Image (cartoon, rainbow, N blue to C red):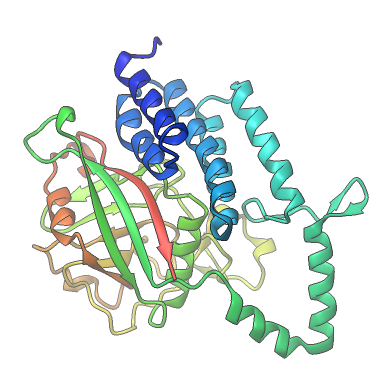
Length: 343
């Protein structure tokens, strides 16, 4: 399909913001909003995601403290682009170059990392060996030091959500910023799971697939976008809700999080909670947020509340009022553009 003038202008604007303005964040914002909204097919969406990947690589070079996170986001964008357009030679080439860089710097891709390269240990392989030795010498000290330095701590999440307010059309699409305080002490596994999905970019460019006025807005299905997919980022001892001793007995797509619902946190307006089936311990990646005009107390002690909106609750309520169709699915996509975690 030919590229529309509107989409080409959005791509050009992002390029100018990056090259002339030296502002990768502005360029990413343009791709997430103007460009993405102007895409008309999978190939155009794939190119937009690939361009975002390029920008994250550049951002990694400019921001040393966040280099690892930005390279991972770049990889995630390239991978998502290839899901939409598997034959893109340019994206395959860029992801290949990035994979080499990440391997050289010992940055893991997804759930695994490369220990050997042509029989020689990679930097990550050497690190694994060193950690193993240190664990043998002083396991308690090493574990304590690792926990103290772990980057997985999280206290706040900032969401960028694109939606069309009720009664308007696609030309009136707007973007809201939602800030959520996370309950790391009251629901540590749920917060860790949500934060790791966010840092891995799994929530980027996904949708809120189920919205019910006066109840909640639900998203987080990065697999299918229908409410049938998603799984825990890490292994928490549960396979589709059943306790298992080892992850080797359970495919990753069946990993779930054990309930932490009896933590004293309730489903008040602004609550961030884990979506799951009726069975216990079946939370994966999906979540929901309670708007201002809802107080679903019947979910207390059943679903785990692991955060609270501290800014942007009125936008959550506005989103809960959007026009919906079959299966409570929004007529105009409600898009979760990004989730940024801060410690």
